[in-house]
Length: 133
Image (cartoon, rainbow, N blue to C red; front, side, top):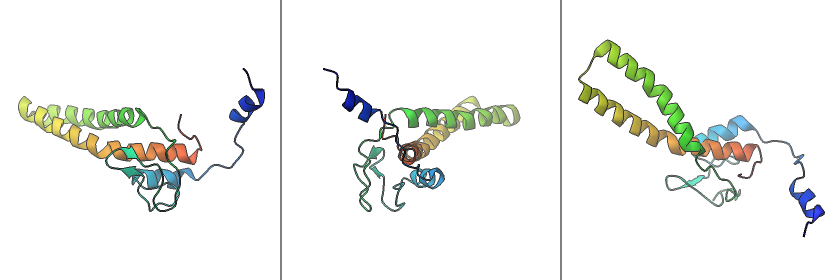
């Protein structure tokens, strides 16, 4: 049965003002609560907490899904590809040494960026009041 009042309430435009995006992104990059900046946003490596332990801001509805992984691949690829080209054309190292070095570099950079990009993406959702997807 179709309930028009319920459907209208679900799709109402949120007229509340947006939150400051830049500070929220910076706090999210540091894996901190985008509201207070002091509580940890992540529990473990990538799990988003249900609430901030300091200010009790709710995070249980934010879903980053595959966004941080795609952004990590994009950033690591744009950093490593030019470095690979420059290393190969100027230094000409042995193939095994070059492959080993760039493999380790890509893995370390990916492990560093993934939780920070996830924090920034959740903070972006929080700042824009997106409440997940």
